[in-house]
Length: 332
Image 1 (cartoon, rainbow, N blue to C red):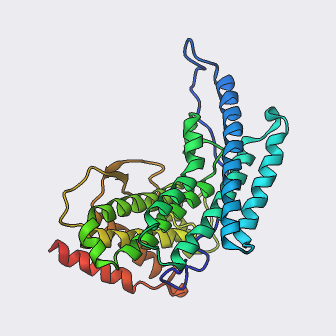
Image 2 (image 1 turned 45 degrees about the vertical axis):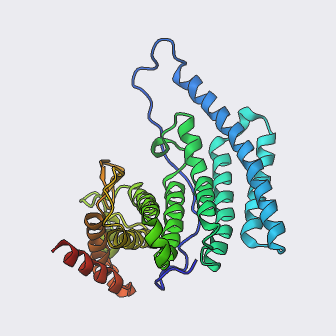
Image 3 (image 1 turned 120 degrees about the vertical axis):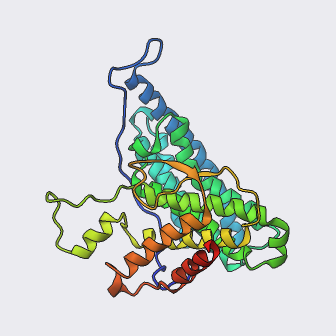
């Protein structure tokens, strides 16, 4: 993908895993399986399902490779991860570590979909086929979280998927929808006919990006926490853990701008998302998304961080300030 600022060269890359679980204080209710037994059964389900999904993904990669007609680094790496996954699943199921298997599968999906995303961007999202392809890629990138949820393991509190992998999955879905919407906003006739569809893509994309920003809580600065670099401390206390977090803020702010500009005349929808800019994983609250309100909040923070702790890094705030000016005049 070709992001809009020079800081974005490493934007769409995979990460790794960690986490913790949360069980009831006093065992289990009458008639239910004990927590340990239930967890063991869930782990077995995860192993079995990951193996099935891995086979499907491997077949898909084979099709992509044949269609490309040449070797691709990301497809080769994805295929290698799935081959390792298959070998591990071939061992005794009781000995398989579901966390390792799920991480291998997730890394393969990240690489496989990255190849397809780049192809879509290179072709400027062909109008006749992009909608279905984007939907397919979102489905692939949602599968790891769905798998955890289906086995009654809350993704935020389960060590099968760590914060970094969860962030990466949300980022990739949000960034994909950002690039797709960016392409759609250039198609005037399409906008006149299908602005309601653009609004859906924007709401979903913003939701994924805010979700990505909210997986980890900001570091609380106090006397028990020491930092050698004050600017780094300020970033961590603001919930900014990487360049990707900044990009997610700018992307979601720009998507709020598109929503306010192109979808303002539509009836409001009850599309509830966590509208906090950072740290909502600690105090989650959901509310209907207001494009202007959310866009202003997140872009003000983006500008503050870029012109504060990151001033020497020369992050571009011109577009963010222009959008904030648009929101200001729209409000008045």
